[in-house]
Image (cartoon, rainbow, N blue to C red; front, side, top):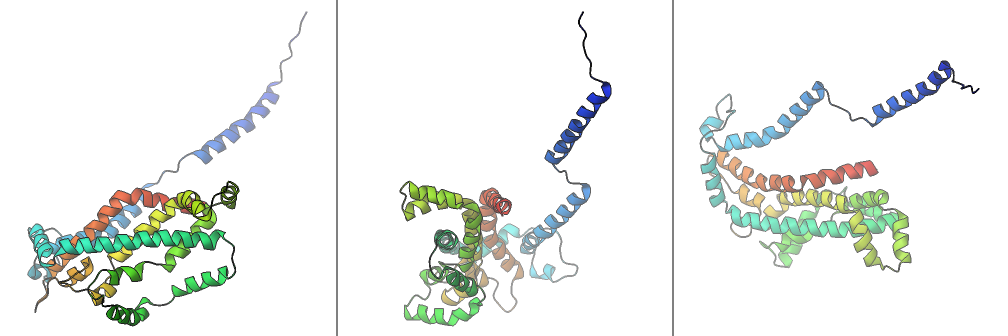
Length: 303
């Protein structure tokens, strides 16, 4: 005769209950967070506030000076938007200005990203005498107002006979202290020392380490830095306005500055030129925005 032993019900209950509790906590911890209605309202307000300057620029470009001077100002589009855009395109010679600005901004952004990544890698991972002192000097140059360098730069440009030539705008913007600091901070976290040591053991030279190890690891930060530098150079006004002319080799900002001149400035024409100058930046962000946001988020997670 065989007998079967059954565990008490109380023992089974005490064993399974903690497991259910742990599973529920894990499910709550791994579940996605859902935004409430207040979060959507706040996001909607921020979106409207961010888009309002661009929308108002388009509204002002579609009106005339008489309507813009009235109170309250217009809050909807008029019927002259495309006419004003066409006049601004022709009067400011924006076709040539777009080409010049693309050359200047693209060259500066690519060079800054390349040099800043190499310099950031050196300051982050290489050991040499005076590294900290040099890094302090680089950061210290960020505290100097750029207006202080205008007179020496202008004297150099005049001596080299580079007035109204694109190299006078490109060369001063090929290096960025912010870019070096940005890439150095990113590579400190994103690039482990073990990967560099493994590449050295395999016989990789310094340039091969930079090309095959550093650049792939720094790709998200390079995309963010490139976008920031492209936008900064595209929107630069003071220095290009001093060394370039509107009838020679203008950039977009210099060309737009010559619109609407007269005894009574045509505000709608100025707004049309400003709108045309902003559209390429919106197009660039629409194409590369996903990579840029992903690079920022990856850097935040690594930090």
